[in-house]
Length: 231
Image 1 (cartoon, rainbow, N blue to C red):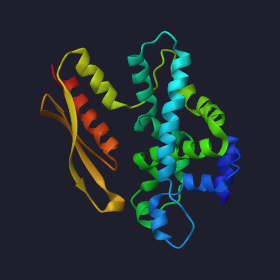
Image 2 (image 1 turned 90 degrees about the vertical axis):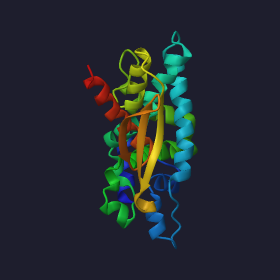
Image 3 (image 1 turned 120 degrees about the vertical axis):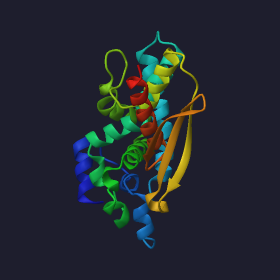
């Protein structure tokens, strides 16, 4: 157990029973690839679990908090909380990036501040916390660091460009949106995706990112600029 992770537990006032789980949550695949003979495990399985735990806990919170809101509104609120830009903000506010174990290549290319990596680490931490201490502790953690960011009208301050673009085009009956990955480039550990967003088949914006979600968000951001600048 590194001193850094001890510091993190002290800061969060959470003490893990299984220290291995906590270390795994902050272990990137690039680190494991460079330390093949160690006992380290990467955080990808915990990320998978954390994603599901977040969906459940956020859904329950919104269901109880807004008893009069229809399913469609709750779905949009949940999407704003669990989207990659929001998860990145949560991870950044907790300084998760500085605790991640990275391979040398990932470190040199700025992986510690890469949005997709930070979002994955946040999900991994939630997954590890769930396995270690259950849903009640996860809910306590989320109430302190996530749900407190909800505004009075139930919105979260985030850069969820995909949701914003969807709402804009639906409100004005502009057309049907579609996202597609048009290019993948770079080696496996530095993969970059290029996404394009189309409206009724016509290209509206393009964006690049280290994950498909990030690329789609950037494409949506460009599309929003185009639409907002059009008279």
